[in-house]
Image 1 (tube, rainbow, N blue to C red):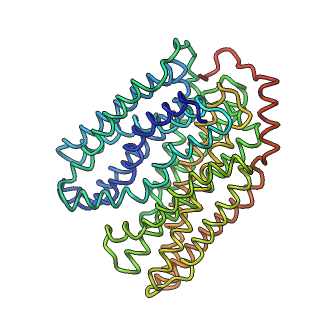
Image 2 (cartoon, rainbow, N blue to C red; image 1 turned 60 degrees about the vertical axis):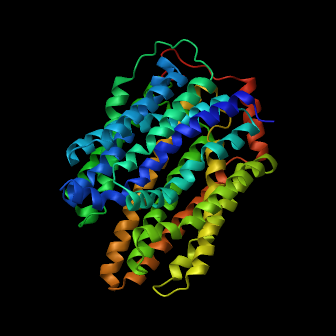
Image 3 (cartoon, rainbow, N blue to C red; image 1 turned 90 degrees about the vertical axis):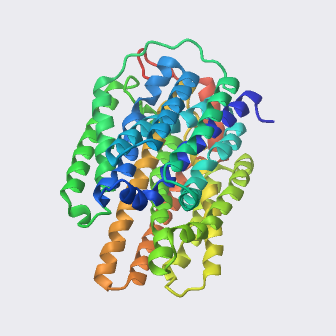
Length: 476
């Protein structure tokens, strides 16, 4: 039976996280209307989404340090309050520039919450409970990209764009109440020295990388100055942080010593590839239905519902399978299903029958749901409690950057293929084959995840030889 305290913690953070995850996608369908209502050009209104994305990247590296300073419960409630404040401010924005500024406030709150969510659940749960609880709290991440555009379209059809932000208010208030009542009280915070050098290197590197990658979808692709320059700067800063963190050995802002664990670095690499495969395809699928098949945005969103249903159904099954087999086996099955559900789109054209494609989307959703649970649990196998925040940060960064890389690459591939072949249908075929390629690489890397015996040995070793935490480490 799942530990009662761990379950209460999972339920409390789940309610708050729903608003954050939906908000990442729900606004995407409103950019055209926002531009019209706020009298802003496409280049300016695009920053409504970009600013939110960059704010997420800024705060992710400091979550572990903040948790050690004020405690997980206090930090969660503070971050959720900031997100609530940002949502209310967005709904009252009078022009596009104030809306962009308020989206930054939202992004700061949301950026703290997402890695903290994983940390809190992993620290509260033990053994098989981890897989069961992660299958629950990860549900919004699975259905958010699918249901977000649908909900956004319905809200825009029934009312004003300001309701896209006001809809967060009841969720945030409920999340705050549940967090206050259900999450265990924190112990006293610890005075932990902030790794200022690490912060100066890592946060700007993520902002530069995410900003550069977000500009790839504009005309010119990787040849644009606002693409290659930020990516180059971000890469140099990231390399500098890695060298700095390895020198600090446990006292860095993000302790890269966690990557000495094979399950952690394998799961992080797979998070990067799954971000590219899963989120990259979420760029292609709506475009396929709209550009090639002629559906409106809402219709395209509704056609993606089978994928969300498949993901919802497979997550509990994946958690149960982890008890019987291993993270490696479940991930392999998941990636096989994702690939099998993507291949038909590489053969589809403008007049392909719709219902077979809906079936393949359901299969793809089954795979998506199965993939994330073993990755999110394997990343923490054999780690000490104080190492969990660092592993959460590493995997979150890998997934965030991987998703941005996947979207950028597939956008460029789609555009260049359309120009070269003169056929949009052929361009989509090429882009979907690339998505299948990402999935195939992830399938091979899944072999590095721990088997059932490996996981048992790692946990036994952890309990027999606890890892000492250096004084001043940025951990919790």
